[in-house]
Image (tube, rainbow, N blue to C red):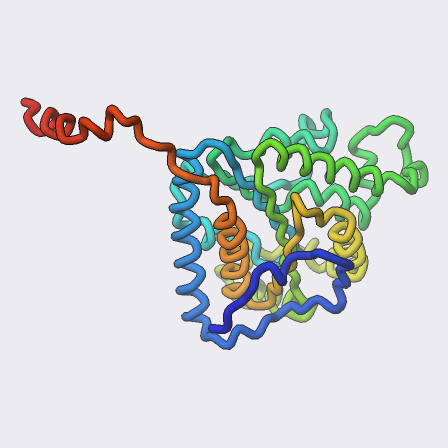
Length: 294
């Protein structure tokens, strides 16, 4: 398999969604890619154990993408080999009545990972500058001061939110949360095929919702607002990575490898040093336990 520099997936300059590939040539079979993903996942799981002992850093993984881009299966496969206590997954659906009584970032704040742990946001705070752009009427549910109609939404609201999101991510990164943001870049043609597979296979019919077809009508709008949001919020402390997602196995591997490559650079993530007294008396402690009578 061709070596892939995951740093090349990072958005560093102007992002043009139309020029971004949805497939990548790695010259390997699906089986080879799957094995590489499993190996990266195992290494991540061991690294998380070390992070837990280190107790200084946490990791936030945000996954965004169009419907059928493979977020659910990616989470299942990439984080399968983690200690179950080391990773929490949150799927952010339509805000509840309780969540709407707070600002839009509140439900994301309270889901942030503890030190030493991973949190995965299946959809994230970026829904508030994506779906609300396509469907601005959703903003009205937030009961914001002075906004009682779509026409009353100020033109600079989205820029304000980009600034708020940047401040949010800068704040948590400065306090030990390592932020990864992945855009699973799917082609419209591949989405069509995945929706058809859901309809063709009875065991997958439950995954299909008529609303999926309605949202396809807004494809170009979503692409426009993804591009805008990524350009406004890809920062050094919380970069976006654009993942070609037409092939699910490859997308999973790229996400796992990206996280692993980045975390390897943190040379201060170490297991704590063992107390000298414990080291000096290990033989004594072992003998004491072995000589213990039931």
